[in-house]
Image (cartoon, rainbow, N blue to C red; front, side, top):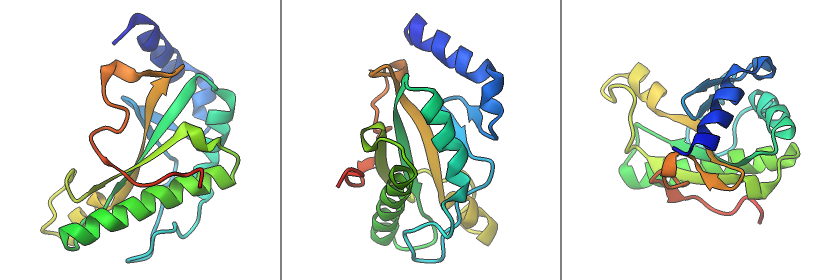
Length: 160
């Protein structure tokens, strides 16, 4: 990672302004409450948990790209991929509707390929069905030399 990117991330992590109910776990942005989706639906039940992220990004123009990752478990792999793409795009569009520039958002789908818990239990599947938000670029430069899509499949254009 370049020194300037590391310095920016350290400054970002240590600012008291981050106490707008957001937390950072590495480059992952943790919302104060999870986004909830009805089974099989793409739109979140309420976009309210996104409000702190909207405020956060409004104050930090140097965060030039946030990756919106969709993850879905408990359904057939093709269905998981399609639903995770639809959810990532729906969340990106909800952020745009709240004032975030669409060019600062990159929705990507992972389907069921990146579980964080055991898919054999309902609790594990619930953990694996999620939206993750990641800082992808600072001042137009990829963080840590990693691909900005994180290895996911592009889910659509939030600007359209």
